[in-house]
Image (cartoon, each protein chain N blue to C red):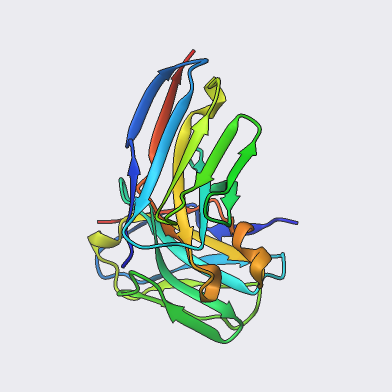
Length: 115
Length: 112
């Protein structure tokens, strides 16, 4: 079991470039989500998915797209990178049901810098 | 959106000392969670609290779910160097996707 994996670990982009942050989990979890972490602000939810084919917006969705074509994968797309998107991005997954509350697993993160 | 105020923002303590940090919210949560994050890693769950007034321990860690459901605290007893890291509180309301609202974090530094 690899848990939640994220690639790349580090990325530098120029303003206006697009890219996809990858997230995969091998625990057959229905719920997956993306957070960004900025200094002093904790983690903020960008987008989430409750199952394959279903996505919804979180607290800070602007500038990001997601899709969930399979249970395992939940990529995050930056359409036109901006310096304000410089952050550390975390993907998380959890199983369905009340028991899922205490078993949200986080990936190791992707550190993104937009110049 | 909901706001979680976590304090203190940072602490620098001597090994062996006890530590206390807390979170307050402008609105209620059904679940309070405490995570620890090491450098270069994602957050790892320490303690989960599901009922108002609940007091739960995990080794040297003790956390409580406030009666009003708007606050929680985390205590660490007899701190050791490996306790160093950033501690986050998070609230959850059993909504779709198990979404979490995080506090700003408490950076703990322990002097041997």
